[in-house]
Length: 255
Image 1 (cartoon, rainbow, N blue to C red):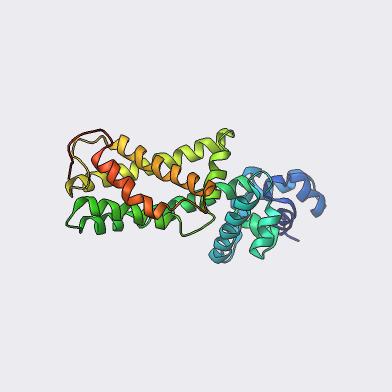
Image 2: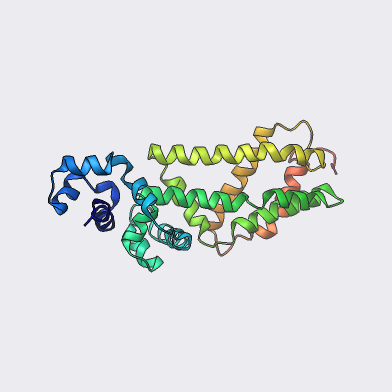
């Protein structure tokens, strides 16, 4: 059996990160130095296996991410395992390791996937909002559409809270911080368009605006998770947008 085949078998059994030169050597019946000479650096084992794949299966990756979202939302990160994810996806544990190095790698991939899905349609939604003749109505439409887009998956609030709940881990905190930075970066590109279209004041600070909207959606998701049977966010959003548009201070009505 070739070294690469042995490596693949071992990776399916216990994960590629746990495989050592000695493991491969023991199964092949050769010195570990021989394995190292043929396979190269141990930290590149995962890349080596991926390069050897004849036909990567993107459908399997999608199934794994869907299953992982369910498992992480229901069990929490600590109690979740790759065995549970594999069972939920209807795949072997080896198939999970083929796409993800470990549970943390899968967790981060899920976070990135959710972020992309939440912002993919945002530029188009901004364009639609600008079509409204009444700017405040356009802003309400934009915010409502963003909320609906984020809530298409009913598990998302629980999953979001699970992400945030892991920030004691510095690696997780840094990854989430990077995601927030990307959100603010996207906002900084879209806010000038909103200002030009009359959906925001020209003197509003871009960073403050980006942080405000992100904090609003984050807070609403947590509130919806806690009060899922009583809180009607869809009804409240137009009122909230109106509060933001007018301000809450006692002053003359502003249109």
